[in-house]
Amino acid sequence: MASVTVTALKKKFGQTEVLKGVDVRVPEGHFAVLVGPSGCGKSTLLRLLAGLEEADTGKIELGDRDVTRLEPRDRNIAMVFQSYALYPHLTVRENLAFGLKLRKTDPAEINKQVERASEMLGLGALLDRLPKQLSGGQRQRVAMGRAIVRKADLYLYDEPLSNLDAALRAQVRVDIRKLHDELGATSVYVTHDQVEAMTLADVIFVLNKGQVEQSGPPLEIFDKPATRFVAAFLGSPA
Ligand code: ADP
Ligand code: MG
Image (cartoon, rainbow, N blue to C red):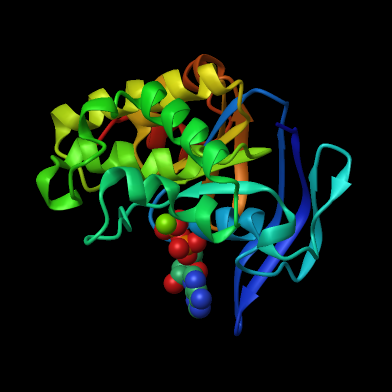
């Protein structure tokens, strides 16, 4: 795992400045939540962290490594998207093993990592099933399993619960936080849901129109909103 330091990060798409100089610092082992309304630049920031988009200017560091210009494969980051992206014709075990097989990992090591991930996520009884034989929550758990079979320096989540119903959302939310604690991971989690942000985060970054309006522990932001935007956004759960 590693700390994350984002400094003065800017990104334009065409004429639109989507990130206008973003600063984010997440200490090693912390669970950070980026929260803000739709279109404020959350996914873009996450994609820049993952290396899926390139920054125009600014800097991204993992621990003491400057990764700003590195390709995704050289960053050692794992990402969980909101769509599950499981392979429908592969069993849960094969889905979990897929990325490790691609990397030509030794079969004994693959088994070990698949066992570890499935134990952490309670997937043991489901390993021989196909995705269509799983519930939504179970599928999301397999998607997380695919991210954690490989030890990463940083785990990124982009609205991973948005396809689940309310009851499942609450359950998987607890799972995600538990997983973070068990992995001893550093996590950055994107959501537009205020309740998710308040319950999951060690530290919250409130984004508005491509800028961080306020950052800090959930209670501090809740008790002492810095701007009217933050007060309105976090004070009135949707
Ligand atoms: P969020 O995840 O907070 O909803 P996004 O980061 O997805 O916001 O998008 C922020 C803004 O950038 C939006 O106005 C979106 O239309 C725009 N945008 C995102 N990706 C691209 C892209 N590849 N090309 C052009 N515009 C984009
Ligand atoms: Mg998004």
